[in-house]
Image 1 (cartoon, rainbow, N blue to C red):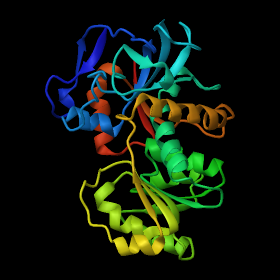
Image 2: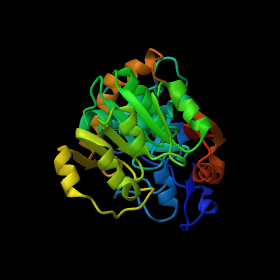
Image 3: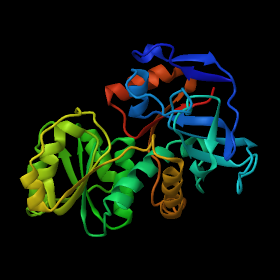
Image 4: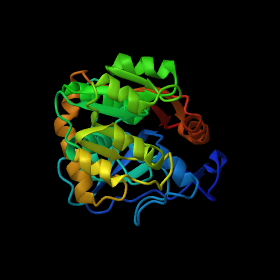
Length: 326
């Protein structure tokens, strides 16, 4: 088969479409013929040599895919050759085939084609596990999403609105904020021109955000804690703004707030399977009914993964960038 390889870490040009051995499904796995994958910022870090796959995972980038099962390993129940699926991966999505633990498979939702489904696994699992399973967002509460126009952000807006929460977002352009509003965002904050702490306080009458979903890390840590409501929950899922920051513990104590930080890739198979099962139970019906949808900015041939990485690095996109099998 062909896959995107990384012979040496570097810029987008480090991604090479090359012939590699076919994967073989182990016990409890299926082999998926990939129709499409999606680009995530973790892939950019892997390309730069800063985020290696966990032991035993595929060395190729790609944390999600959609396609058709072409082989079923021993011990797998409930899935058959020919099933159209999408999958959460530890790596290997930028390829023509990938072996996937059965617990990380999801059926293609009703009303979507296989390519569209590739935009779903990583964002739905990330948002549901952090915003709902960890931070326990409830109806009537306020969720602040940083990077509201990203793949994660566009999914977080829709899921939060679906459960009856109020949603605030930050983004850097009017076009992005307008799109967030179309998805249902109530409070629109241009982080280039406005202080999100002040804007959240103003919009909530001084109460603050009950839950914050943060992709920035260190750069926003202090302001995120100040923007939290009493009993607020900050869920950190990225470090685009650095890895080290000071935290005022007194502010945290006064607000009786909680800070969590999670990633999906290195979790044990059992934890990933539990998250995937929760997504299938709670999110898939919303997608099937049309209340929630994937947002796709553009599709590029998988062999042009370097261009897809340039698009993400430029941050001009809205939603997900897909890589489609050639």
